[in-house]
Length: 288
Ligand code: GLU
Image 1: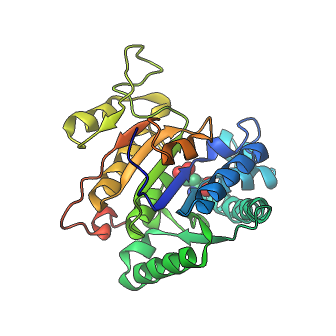
Image 2: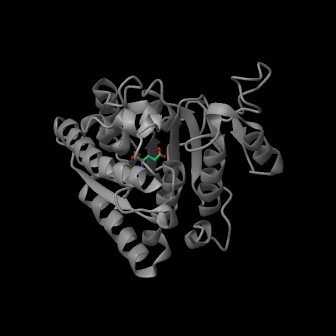
């Protein structure tokens, strides 16, 4: 058992693939409902809970019937700018829909929720960062479960975090969270890509993020790379760990993993925090 009883402030990150149907990109209501129940239960148990949820673009593309155009890349007149516009419009449509679903599901348990959309500027700019931290603090004091996403509608390449793994670690650092639970489509961090290498082993515990561990992420290929891949999870771990926040990477296939992890069950990969004395959150944001 892990000693997580004292973890008071918990950030949970869920990716698009875990809350949408892969056939259509539409919201998976059954899973969303389970997720909301898990989060509300954590909150009822006295924890401060923050959710970092993706899914805006996926839900928006489905809602506006533009999924195929964006994804297959064959839209004849679509240059990169056209695609960006489409993606950002989809995010605007989808974020509102997603939030409506979260509102509805949380309200079934009389649980207050709130929406916080961020870009890199929120962190790099001192006034914005200060405001964001205060707002989170106030929301948690009021008893809300904030739902956070990147502000994809206005974030362009220069000011985007790019993936919500990084964003969730930034949020955890910003609000001094005790634990970050990163839910993914894989059981945790492996020594190699388990899809390609049958010898790959799940790493249960990481005391220190050294070169060996970084190497595992670099060695992983295919579905483990890119947005939401293992490399981004290690990057997130670097931020969380240096800020003094423990982190668990676990599989989102069973959402009951959330309360099991909070209770200290040995699920997924546990990365110990290794607080850096001169941690400045801004240092982890690459200036665009
Ligand atoms: N912010 C994006 C969305 O809500 C997802 C980014 C990611 O998957 O990491 O659709």
